[in-house]
Structure formats: structure tokens, C-alpha cells
Image (tube, rainbow, N blue to C red; front, side, top):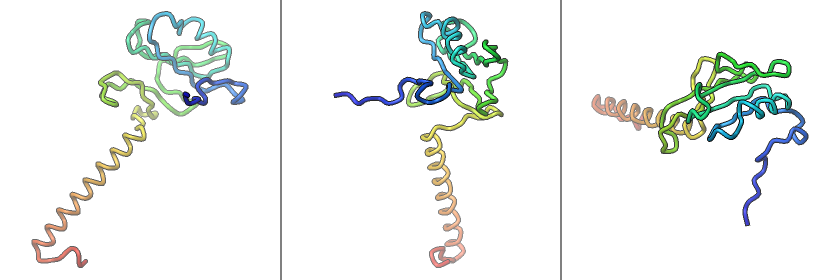
Length: 151
């Protein structure tokens, strides 16, 4: 028996408001991301509609961010979503073993926001650097005849 996956769909009547951001990841040409879906999201009141097209199924650009003005979307010329204080960027690199062009959240200056795993890895690296630094300092003290364990 399969596990029921909660919140796989967003229903405005359940959450009480439209989402601020909807992201479509294009995998083929039949999704109509720039046609009926664009209109559907506008009618639903979604503030930002993002189309990420990593395989260039729709042509250029790879990333388009649309902002709802009135009842229609306008294509933004920047990648910062000011109402939610987040940006989006395309990051080329290796993630979970796969080299790819990834869609990533970033801050206003374009710095990528780290995933939980990336933050943990960064903290482990910093801890290891501090341990190595402490070991070097302890060795210097020993060379000077001072036992660091007695300080």
C-alpha cells in the first residue's frame, strides 16, 4: 500500500489564498506554459509565474519570470521577486551527483541560498578547519614547552 502524499496540489480554497509564486519546469512542447497556463495562473491571482526551460523546448530564454499587473502578466527584465524578497538564478554545477543547469533561489545580490545539505557540509568544513587550526596552535605551544592540555 502506497503512502498518501499530502499537499501534492495547491487548492486556493484549502489554503485561503493564491500562491505567491508558481514555477513551471518545461519538459516538452505540449505543456502550453506560455499560453493557457499563463492565463490560468493570472486568473488565479498568482503574483509570479516562473517558466524554467532547461532544455530550451520553448526557445530562449531558459528562465522567464512574469509578474502579475492587473489581470495580465508582464515579463520581468530582472530575476528578483520583490514581493517575496527572493531571486532566482541558474546555477551550473553538480548537485546530488548530476552536472546540470539548476534553478536556484538567491538573495537580492544574486548569492545562492544554500540547501540544508549544503549548509551542513559548509559547517562541517568550517569545523574541520577550526580543528586543524587548534591542532597547529597546540603543536606550536608544545614546541615552546607548554602543554596545551594544562591551559
